[in-house]
Length: 268
Image (cartoon, rainbow, N blue to C red; front, side, top):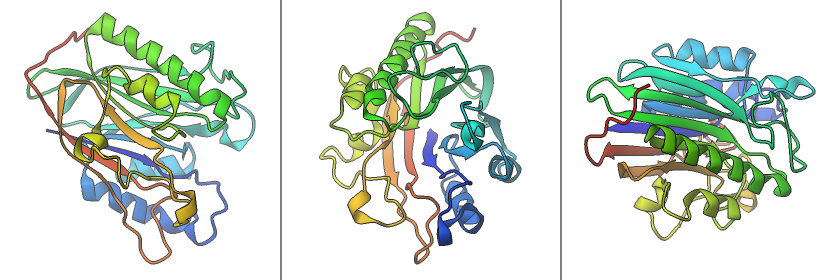
């Protein structure tokens, strides 16, 4: 069994009033600990006190994130991935940028507002030796960039599957609804399966972004996508709040997976 969470924790610099990071960080941590994910994909994690808070309070996890770059204070923003050390052996990690030149740090394309990264880790399950690649990302919100981001990610996923025959788990804030081309590019041919829709096939109550409780802003832009190596046992959106205090302006999304069969893959 593998427990997965994707959680946009909202950048700590944001002037969010009563929902400022300093007031909600313990609540955000509580929601992570309540689920106890084996794999955790975060978005909008600034490599300042915010990331240090995460690292310090999740000592059982390996933390891997790369600054996205670009101008201003948000250059230190990351889309880091974390995994529990006890069930996994780390084989490799890497990062690339969602642009026409993905190997160039800080690169942007298609009119994107910020550089955007993809973090990945290839992991071997200590119990079985099965190999998976865990991928975490945060797409740009510029409409002209979202489809380009999806194409670059899909091309990389196709290549990595061909080269390594690895199982895939992808988490992220994709800044697109599930009727968008970006969603179809990633799921349309069945290479990746939407974990939540395996449990809720009618697509009801999928919204994760809520702008601190504003119903009119709600959108289903955070996804957990998995390859067909996995059976989805459960998937949920965590709607926890404490009055007007939220853990973030996104609800965390979770999935519980089982391997369909023993799968080793390449561990090189």
